[in-house]
Image (cartoon, rainbow, N blue to C red; front, side, top):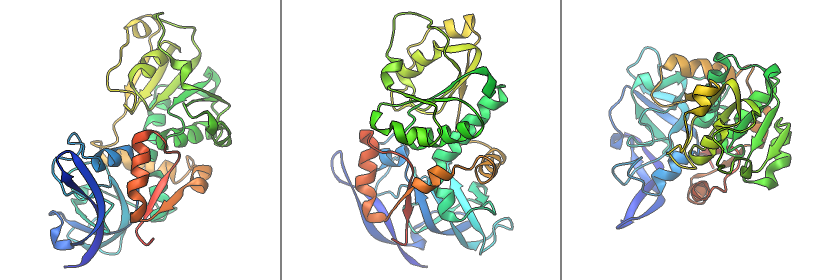
Length: 330
């Protein structure tokens, strides 16, 4: 048994939730083959929902959020991940209903773990985290559908978010002309520094009455869902594809079938949670290799557990930009 600190969310009154640092013990953790000393985690929108008391994410409180974690295995019954190995854990139930990476220790099933790429340390992996994994999976789906730079511009919605910024840099690095779509017009210079060739406001996707618009994009990576996604589909060139991985603008798509049946547009769903480990490992290897995002890495910001409450609140307000890394040593 080992005592450790964790940032846990408590229901302090009916419908009111508060996060604070508590002392826990490894005996409090759930069953699992692998006990990991977490050195770093990252901040995600789902963590913000859990911290706000969303029962759609977390059923019971007190709870330790953190859907991402990286660190050293300290106890293990798994031959694949012996004590001393360094691992990444993302997705599955981590940080949702299983104590997550905002605690200094987690215990998880061995089949939730991925070996740390040799080119990375724990902090680097958490600069990307689930956001980077999702961006990589989204890009990979578009590439598998045949998207190529010579076909025309590619749009990225929610471009200043954690997924969006990484997607912009990956696509730009692959030679695409990237049109970054964001409501944060003050971040235009930052998006261009990541490789975006053009930055436009979210009014570019204001709902219109026409069932189709003039084709403008060879493909797109959507992180917001809702009405912007429905409008985006109208602007995709014949045979183009849109990957969809988010819902900050809402879960419903008020779309018609016209983009699909008149232009053959493909809408590709992207899940980063319940997918085979082999798919995760592939994307991690690319992010640690030729899809690396040095500008995103350079601009990542570190914080300690005491800063989590304010940072997660900014996520819910839509005020968060770029990658935030929780460093348990701070």
